[in-house]
Image (cartoon, rainbow, N blue to C red; front, side, top):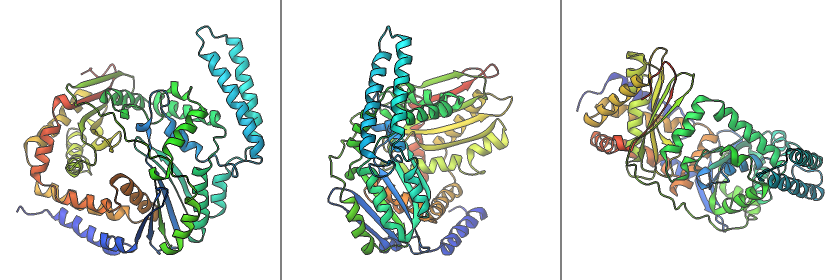
Length: 503
């Protein structure tokens, strides 16, 4: 074997020190001693990890639904329900639920009347303004019964921190932490908001999401490019749809649409909860049953049927814009469940991780043609076949063509020459160090346990994924790179302006 560099041995030593200095053991065997998994009769999966390092508990709820489960006409609904999940229930967030329901029915009726007029080819502008005023009046009347932000304020008063949520292509997640003596409060709040959600202020919140789209996509050159790039990358699969949704859908989907989407996907068998901290499983499980057994079982949503067809030609989108030129290049690759997933991760790590990575050294440090450059897997999600991306933002005076040429030189090298022993060793050391860092906080552990359980069917995948990277060989990298990085499997996107020639 070739001599391993001093830098690698230092990294190995650091990894060992991190492991020794971390609070509590971080290996699989130690986790197995403290993890309890139970599936309730309604199908909900519960993971409890006893970690008595401090009198706090972090909670994470994973729902197996994202934008990939949407269909044309209702794009953005997964993200929209994430917003609705903080609006409360028939008890939380209202001062008179009975009257509020009548008021919300009036809002729905006023909205549908307006929507019908808007769809007319000869819509009367005066009538539209009249109906908009009527809708606002019904919204104002319904708002009289709203106790704003009560869900979050209950958590704040109980000493909770980190209240947050996210939606992506494959999943939706909800999280926060509480003192250890507030476990029952969490069980009540979390079960209640999925048992009895009230979609109050729906159309007002829909306006908020529209503004979010304007800020993150329509007002950002990179946001506009990435949306177009993604759309041409996937011909059939719903990964082509933006998580935030298309603006026309954000103007048209209804409270009834959101309710139907929720009823279909927010069923216990589609959900996994994780609780990590100063708790005992035998003490917590009865409380979990008390509250979460209330959720009706429902029917597990079917898996997606659409399969993205193999790419047969290179696709290119070139977007004129006065902003700084940006270059993105993607290659289709299998889902994260593929046996070669660890090989793709190793390739991305070698090309993109750290200042000694190949892309940084070539494009940023040596040639100085890019302000930053990198590569990563999992775009726009990784549950289904997706893309491995390469990207770079040009330095002043340089072009997308220079970025493209330099990236493809690095791709060509990794498809024709075996990576060095040093590079592969660093990949494996970093994977272990990243695992240790990811397990340093209750919140991170809760998220990882729930997501691995939901995705792989076993939380142990969190550790096994590192073992898989440890088994990657130089021959594996050559084999996968040669099969993947071919022109017909490629998608290109770039921002161009007067000083950047189009490809």
